[in-house]
Length: 337
Image (cartoon, rainbow, N blue to C red; front, side, top):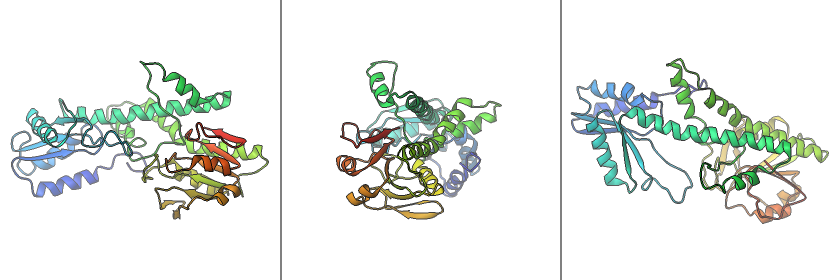
């Protein structure tokens, strides 16, 4: 996506053009990148057929969305079910045969690449919208003096009709914050405005600013301003126990801390450095003295490596955006998202 949230298909186009140079009869070409419905048939098929090949007869073209959940210990690429949609029935069969022979998970065939492309966007949009819903619920609960985490724990006791999603400082990763807007862009071709998706984007994108506003309120209650206060940010990766900072909401949080004049240090056992505020920022190793001297500790990524008991014991104030300190004795001033 570019800055205007329009898909950039140049990587796909250039890759297929390179493949086309060496295309031969019997070749199978499968696109796995998340994209808008129509990409496989509108971009990939014409490039390959321009070489004199015929889809479903001399070349086999399909779409099968990548399904990867970084940090998931149960489901890896090999055992996660695969969805496959070919340009023709023959294309589907050939692609399905490939995946069936190299993967342990089931292969589910759909009628076209467009169905498979839409299916992947639906998966990510489902998460995008439900995370926005629970983020909004967290904001409301805070205003009402209700623990949103307790609300979620209570709701998920229902054995049907409910799936637990959790609030956080914003969306990160290369999929959930971006992919739904492929559909938003494509929908304009059909004179349709995806109001639900865009509203969810507004809510999720506003969470870093909400977090900073809460930090300001907490410090203000202690008679301090954010400007000049010492803040320790725990975690910059967008998700626990990984080193990926792409689209991490913590990048925006760090920029806002700097904008408001805070003195901050970032700790992440999985990330050595990251780029924010137009420069490379080095992470630091957490020490007791750092915690003792900090005005506030902001937990943004709930890595398993963090010593939560030590952090709680040595900190003056903690603002926890992930409910990471659940069950841990915390200091007198402990706030949750």
